Length: 414
Image (spheres, helix red, strand yellow):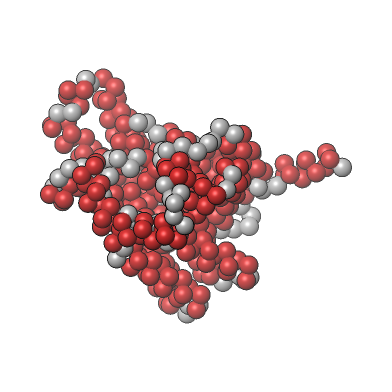
């Protein structure tokens, strides 16, 4: 009986997710309150939660929903409750990614879920506790998971799938939570704007989608008009980037690109290298043109070249203005050639080209908008989480494209 049950679990499409959750369960034993977790646990000792959140809205942040949840977990509940909740959020993340990427029922879902689990595990673990375990997870990991589930809901509407009341309730809870964070609110606005246009053209617009879109717009207005966000920006300029308001737009663009790409290239993130390898391999399979095959290697080749320069050159040269200009140019070329590669990989389908480019753009812009913040460098790598997830989504799409090309080739040969 037990043997059969174990076999059933092993054969399940969700078995890779179970392994991933088991790994994070083990790692969670080492997770304790730190950094901002401790601050949020003691800062409002003489205030009730409502008073504290109101003050935060007026003086620091529009993330009133996220910070309410953060305070509840950091101050009022045992850390074990957050750990269990966090494991559930990890599952929601991989579940949503899987459902978003799987189009046909005849796909090898277990293999795809295995790739998803491996790539999720390759997201730098240090990202999850930069500002404290609870603070970082509630502000970024939980936002990413709930945001993706909300996008999954849009896919279901487009596919005309049945949606029960339970799913609608979860959708609204996820939507309200995700939209309380600036980066995700922007991503959802872009995705749902395009989704609504598509639904109107296909005469499939639903009241629930209109309500969802209105909530997204209201959330963005709420963020933009929050007095605390303006106040925080002034304080952070003094603390982290004195004179930020006086620098040129070009300098801000440079800061946005450099702060984003330094983590992936200078710090050598494996997840980015895997993405570039899969991009190159996908382009290689898509064309017989040798020139295009060579161009497809550019993102990976430029990344390796730049990483090598960082290893052999001394700090004085690296910090020189000339090197920094060249560094910025190479970063921009990598980003441009990545988009070019995406278009080549999906050249047989305009729809796939659009979706691939949309995923890339949303991931890029979610991190690039940090150029407008004085904490563009101080905020750390956690602000790149949405970018990393976009790379994971694209990596899985590349793998699927490679497999479909191999299948087509085998059929032709036979």
